[in-house]
Amino acid sequence: MTAFLIRRLLLAIPTLLLVMTAVFALARIVPGDPALVILGDQATQEALDALRERLGLDKPLAAQYIEFLGGILTGNLGTSLITGKSVWSEVVAVIPFTIELTLAAILIGVLLGVPLGLYAAVHCNRWPDTLTRLISLAGLSFPAFVSAILLLLAFAIYLRWFPVISSPALDDPIERIRHLALPALNLGLIMTAYVTRVMRASVLNVLGEDYIRTARAKGMGARVVLWRHALRNALIPVATVVGLYLGTMIGNSVLTEIVFNRPGLGKLILGALDQRDYTLLQGLMIFFAGLIVLANAATDIAYGVIDPRVRYRS
Amino acid sequence: MTSAAAPTLNRSSGSKRFLSQPGSKFGLGVVILVVLAAIFAPWIWPIDPLEQDVLGKLAPPSLEHPLGTDSFGRDVLSRLLHAARISLFIGVMAIALALVLGTAIGVAAGYIGGWFDSMVCALLDVLLSFPTLLLGLMVVAMLGPSVENLIIAIAITELAPFARVARAPAIALRGREFVEAGRALGFSDMRIVVVHVVPNLLSEVVVVASLWLAAAIRTEASLSFIGLGVKPPTPTWGGMIREGFEHILDAPWLALAPGFAILITVLGLNLLGDGLRDALDPKAQRE
Image (cartoon, rainbow over all chains, first blue to last red; front, side):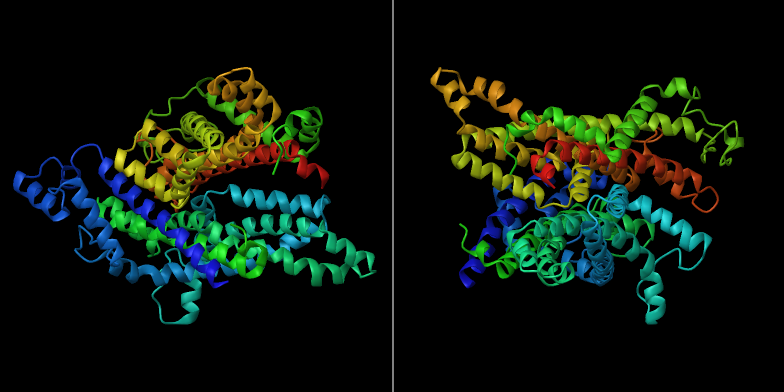
């Protein structure tokens, strides 16, 4: 097991290195001079030179690359051009709000999606199944900002049950939940659609396995077979959904944070875009990509823990 | 894993299966309607989408303006129909680009194998490590928002799925008898790939294309909503929602109409793609 764990983590290293190289390259493909792009056409020659020096753009490309990689390897994602603070401190300042939102959404997604998927699979190809499939496909078709606007209109503007602007830094726990509810529901319902589909497919897959037929042949009741034999195995792919879904989830939370005007990593990225804070943007891209690479590794490791066969495959 | 020849064998039963599902029929119908609406936009509702009427701004839906007017007094229905053209064009072009490049990369990696394959796989892993929306956002921010750059950005975010789908069957086909026979006859690799390998994996690629077209349209709308889409005054669905969201309290239809248009288009494409996959995947047939 330890060997498998170490091997899988080592596999993440070349991917991470390539990710950093890709971000480095992308940030330097910008047509024109980055300093000019950041400061605009009106900038003086001195200001441009000063910024180039600050960004290290006056050095040769190879030196820039080594400095960039070295910085990241020592845990330094760079400094924001605008605020002068480190990318890490910018991230740490808002990440609790994003984590809160994400966890609430995952909770909603699993609590609703698992039973719905199971229900659909048990009624495979009959109307509850067709209905569930249609609804979950509709849920997956919503761009996150359209569903967010619908929730906002219905529950915050017309019914006035929840605040229009979600400000998360409140001490009162009930108020905090009221502010969290709509954004979490938005992300959570989209995730529910996804979990439902994965769960349905997974249950159907497991129900087709030989050991289920054996259990049935031994005369076990359908209920016992479903709950004791099928459910536990069907949950394995669902447990790994979070890792695979992370990229989509990050994009959706950016859009949700815009609609509800809620601070978080999404708003941080948009701020960086608006202010042309390219170093912050670059640091955030590496942060997110690193998160996904690690989540993928964690997903594989989780598979290895649950299913020993995975460990011994080359 | 789907064997590459199977979809061809099941084609007749596949199309029957496709049409027997109410979902796929509905999806196909919706997609056809949206495409027709986009093509015939100027004839369906012959009002200029850019014509401003400051006195009649933010008018609620009426007979003259079935979907009301926006903050410049422009007719929302006309803008919605013309936006369908831009949004579909960007989506289709991005997918076409991703399909051609992705399939070529995937087939080359699978057919050549060895270190080239390992290298391509490593690069695809990198592409898949970025959240789709953020990768698109970064590329558009770097290149600048224009129709061409949006197409490039969205194509980059969807290159990897096509490459992956094309790679696996290319590996399987490499060892098949008819490919060996072609080689024995002295055909060049290029001819073998183009004439014998590619046609055998097209059906799988097409299924991916219809599902990812839905994603492409959603990504384009999201980028436009964030403010990185085609520049105003050109109407796009995402851009219309962005403008309409500012008036969400007094004129909610401005954001609702394009939101509904995106939803129905993406849902139609997803239903279509799902139906195609079920119809062409022999594994699903057994269920």
